[in-house]
Length: 162
Image 1: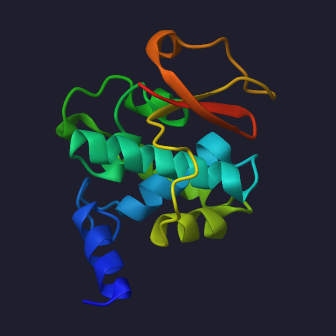
Image 2: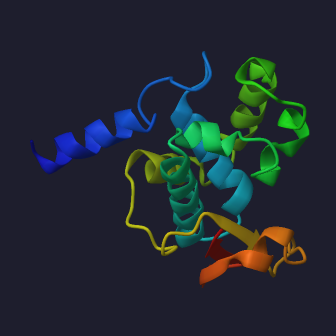
């Protein structure tokens, strides 16, 4: 099997190619919208780092990247529309599509989609979590940082393993 065939197979396994998480919503669009919402103000390295983090979580939990991106209270850009979700059937697909369509207007949308469709080496050193420690969206260190191993700093975010 060639490298490209292996990459294609891996993408399909983790839900990057097929509509596997929510009917009517492409997994790639969910993840790319998350990159824009979480790091659209960063350079490409910042978006790659967020993508790496989503991938690391999905791998650790045996789930898809789209499923991790939409897990309630994990990525703040989704909080307003998924805060009351307990099961997959609770998602309001129309609101998710509306938010994705807003993110598609961002000037870095194609760049974010390219990052999702063409996985990059992990620059986060295995990070499963991050938070903005500086910049306009900075927050105090969340409780999960009490027991994490910080792995790197990229842009306005600190990354670590929980």
